[in-house]
Length: 366
Image (tube, rainbow, N blue to C red; front, top):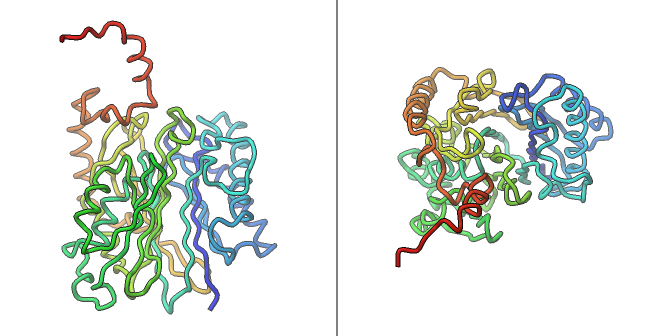
């Protein structure tokens, strides 16, 4: 059987209003751009959507990961949308496009990218998680729950295809290195690293029994690429479900209890990741709290059947209530940690300039 490639590429090319949402005209332009290439059979199928102020291009094709034509298509689409954003004077028009020219691969140019290639199973359920106002490390906690925690995922105990566990590729975003952990036997070693999500992120998860990819995420950090503060990175995560992978309900369950992530206002604050439906995905309060949307698809010959907007379910009302309670408490702390991020996460704000200006006023006590 031919392999299918599932690609999600996202970018913020202009917010409406401020950093809260995407103007409908940008989504229309993105849809026009992807629909035109369908006639050349570059894509099998596509779906244009958004979370907060980020446009997300969900695409299926047979050209493999890191394909120049697919990445060129996404880049051209974002450039075209930027033109519309500038006409409308939208905020931060083109802010995720860090170059004036495409170099063959969209990675390193600003947009976030998550891709996986696999042979489509008899039934292929896939969930695309899209977040706004947070960073790639936000996926560490839910991925650990999905693929390592039997209290969240009973399939780890009772499904023979899952009982052997999963392999995790963990990236060091500062050193640009990757290390692979085999779980459950190396779980404690892995937690030493993924518990620091500002630096270490789970990039890929593989089933040991099936020897196949189970999940992949975007791990681009805009601040590190740009060398200056330009906001958080609004990551995406692709997860395959069922038949040796966690069930749909097991994949969704970690988001029933919101965890704290970095991002929120000016990318410099800690806040709860609130699961929401598409209709509530515009972060407004203090430019937040951070949001996550989960769209489910069934693949059929590479065609996207769906989506199902999972977090629109009333079952997540309690998670949203809890997220609001956490947000209320954290906001009372104002500029003090842990509402404001620790100094390592503030290096692309005004902090270095203030430290430099006051350097001579620090007097040694020894």
